[in-house]
Length: 378
Image (cartoon, rainbow, N blue to C red; front, side, top):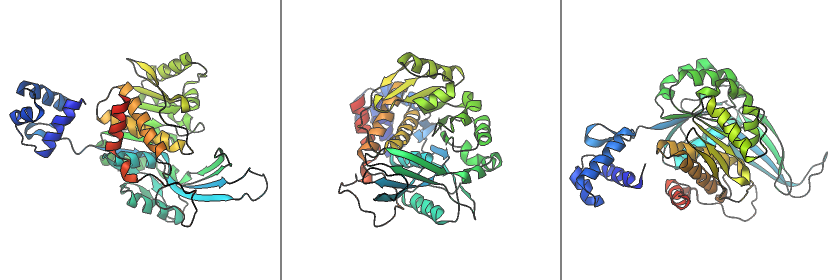
């Protein structure tokens, strides 16, 4: 969507019955130019029919993991087989939860489909989603089991030394359960899924819903679940190592990135994004490819930045940006995440001391903040 189209859409939002002559006067352009812009907005699905009915019922569905993260951060060098002094921090995270949280902040309606139980961690997830205004009414409640949890240990340089994740509750999200939520899913403008789901559930989703699917492998060990459905995804966002698993191509040089990306495109993927860490992001579709450099310093919240990147490219799809712009916006969203310092969701354990730094005001992580960085990137 161009800046002029955004301007005209703003006038129509204020008054859906505004005339083309009035828009022309406000925008200081000719009436014929207004007619062309309105035609383009209709073609893009942003206006519907007469009286300029806005396509405001657009929403995104995300299906995948929400987890309670328990982080142990050592204040000195880790010593094996001993008690290490440090901080223990509890947060509510998970790829899909983080993505819909950011889409929410970018003023996009969302629906999160996940699974949780009636245990302490399940109640923590519910409370966090309520506070963040993330709808979970279509999710699966599985009483008597354990909600998703992940334990991470960081050394004194804030390097993640290891993780143990229990997301077995997501195995209850079966093809039959997805079929029971088909009305919600089918009405979405786009669908985000992660590889925490069962492989047969991923196959069912990819085969039965004719809407663009954005997919995140989430880890090297789970990437294989996506292989059989690869031709039915609209966009794949992967790390370099995940891309190697998906394509069986070792990535050492720039030409290897192109080979891996076009391997996925030849198999039916429309857009490919390969995260290169501090090296930025490689992007590709049938028409073009390239690299967008990183604009954020490395932080101890890089995984959250990956999720913010995904939110950025979904935002870009809804606004009809081209793939290079989408990659730039994804990197801009990741920069917002990195600059936040502390993305800890409501539900953190009380009484955990911080290091004195002030977290960014969550209200600043918004569509306006994204737009400011987008315009700088362009």
